[in-house]
Image 1: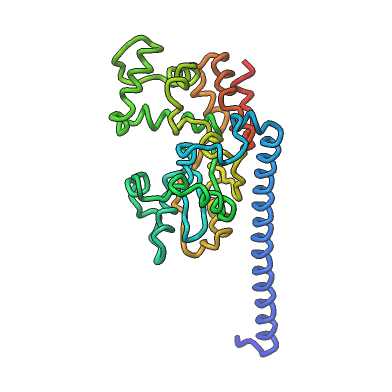
Image 2: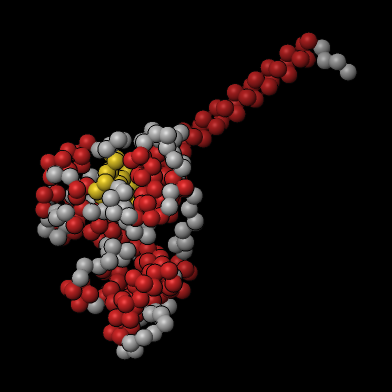
Length: 312
């Protein structure tokens, strides 16, 4: 049956109302989401500021300003002059994908898809610009005016990731097998094991001789020692646990959301059962010492103390 003009006008009117309400609903959703993400960022930065202000000298090892940092202490800060960005990369915190983004930005438009960039291009020397390569006066200017960001991760989960990658993955045997043998010889007294245990790795980290002989490998060095968040005022602090959402927010902040798509990443596992499984064979006293070793990272970046591992 044909619709009358009156009925047709009514249907068009109702359809328009539905469309307006739908758009309004989506706008409200995105506005509330943006507000939530903004508040989350402000909370992370406030947490950082409060901890730094309360114990700045202890956290910074007595270094009160950037001038006290050596070139080697700034080698994790990647600079993109085209867009005015500084990224402090932390191994085992999505750093390969963020280096891909920085590589693409460095080479300018038309932007490549970051997912298409091979690992060797972003890990090789000279493919990214480091802050330590600039004269000191330029470093100060860039740190003052550029947008600075970093991504962090639950410290114990990061340790597990580093152990799995460097000591359980056979592709790393060439570089890390000598260290595996050294660790096993020290703590299990057998010179040629097939693999070290996670407990052996913890023993190595807690041994005072480890840090005295050579600074911690960046893959398990404390995050605040890599990025100096009490000396550098970061504009954005992302978390591995909310990586995709944080990456989207950061790209929006940088006005790059229509040009760059952050590569998809796996879901980060941080539940207590996951941690308990890895620490089951680590004695309580060593767990407590390990927490003390990484306590500053837990506090600075707002990660909860893993009481289920430390209360016995």
